[in-house]
Image 1: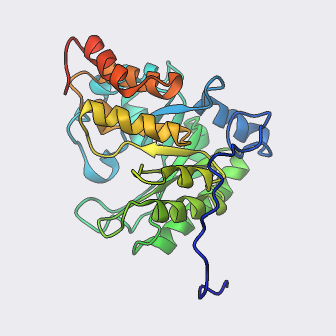
Image 2: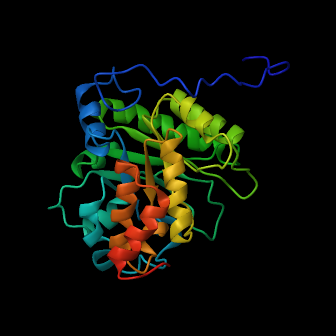
Length: 295
C-alpha cells in the first residue's frame, strides 16, 4: 500500500491539453471490444461526442415522486428526445415502449429505501438480464468516503467483470452523502477511483470551482448529474459550464420531468449540450417552446 504520509496534492492536470485524438469518439474507449464500443457509441453522439441522458430511476429507493407518478404518461413521451434513458428494469418493462429504440442505462444496484441507510446497496440485477433487456449500459451507485464504500466498490467491480464478459459498459455513479463536500478535490478522488477500478463511464455532480480538473483527471467520460430541481436559468447554466469544462454529457431527471413543460426543457438541454447554446439563449428557447413558462 502506498505510504500516505508525505503524499503531495495533485496540481498538474493540464486542463488546456486535450486527450490525444482517437479513431473512436468516446474518451478512453479506443481499446475496448467491439460490443462495448458499439453500445457506448449508441449513448454518445458521434457528431458531438456527448450525451443527454434522461434519469427517472428515483423510484428504486424513494417510490413515486413528483413528475414520476405515471411513467407511461410523464416519461414515455420524452424518450424520443433523449440520447439514453436511465431507469430500472421494472420501469422499462412496464412503462416504456421498446419501439423508439432509445439506448438504455439500467440501474443495477439497490436495496435500502429512503427509510434506511442508503449506502447499504447490493447488486440488484444479474448481467444476463441486462442482455435480455438490450441494455447499452448498467449503472451502479458508489459511495466513496461513505459507510458503504467497500461494499459499493465491490458491487461495481463485480458488475465490471460481468459487463466485460457481456460487452456491456458500467456507469459508476458517485453518491455524495450529507456529510461529504461536493468540491473538486472529493469529486476527483471519487471519479478517478471509479474509473481506475474499471467503470467505462462516471456520473458525478458539478462543482463551481475547478470542475475542469475533475474531467481532465478522469480517463473515462464524466457525465454531470442534474441533481435537485433548479430554476431554468440555473439548470441550463450548470449544464453549459459542465460541458464547457470537459463533461461528456448530462444526466438530468428532476430538472426535466418536474418542469411545467418537460418536453420543452429536454429539447433545450439538448441544444445546450450538443450545439453549445448559451444559457441565456436557452432560457428564451424554453420560454418559446413552453408558451411563456419560466419555471
